[in-house]
Image 1: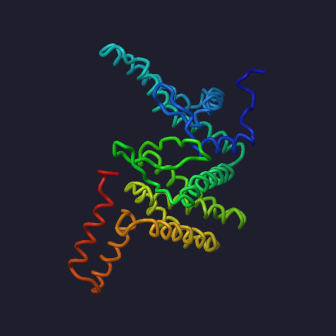
Image 2: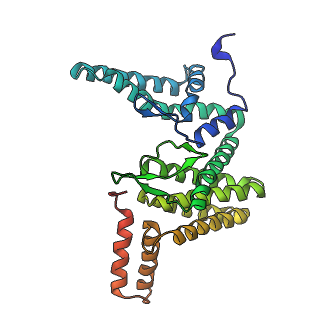
Image 3: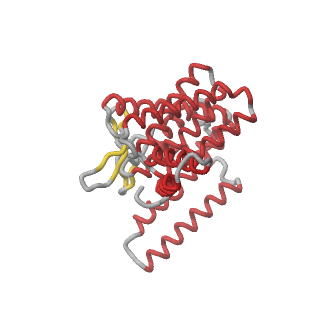
Length: 305
């Protein structure tokens, strides 16, 4: 039997792959690239990819890789000395992330997309709860500062370092993605798991609000209209919707209790938006409305994350 015909992607691969993707502990660095458990899936991705080499999508991916390496060789001829570094950047920084499409396509064929979303949601909830609880117990901030004044996300997973905590906007987008995945899975699981998933959403929201990241805060806000529309279209979603709303309210309450007045951008923008509505309704003053526009503008600026 040829090695490319060995079926290594069976049911256990789905929860394992989901765990490696949803629990991004740091495994050190390779050629100055920080490595996380998702990179351990590279051999499986390679096998899945090689088994369908004649597929047009696989050939397109191969063509992209060949063109990428060709451009690196040309660039090295013009500016020698960067061949290895640029090749590593191409593999780890450009090709690796889209290669998960081949693994996801195979896993969805074997177990179905519902199973993939479920396991990603379950592991994401566990990860978010485990890294948030210590912050609540110790009353530690989510956003902390290095001695040089740069901000980082102050979280660890059972004492282990987390991947990409070096910058606020490098890790907090993951919390938004995990909240979206959990929100999608919460509608089709038993009540006990719905509570666990709601706790995961609350932790994700708490971390995003506490990080004070503009991009992630806006992404979290965009999740609400989608959930409201889904709740309107699918009426049986009432209980999960109530759990999600309760989770978000809990996260807002915890963040407000731990934040000084006006200290958080999302909380401050909510206050200013309320002031804007009051002004337009005739219950506020022009000064209140002007201050509201200034506060809301601060949330949408892209500088100083």
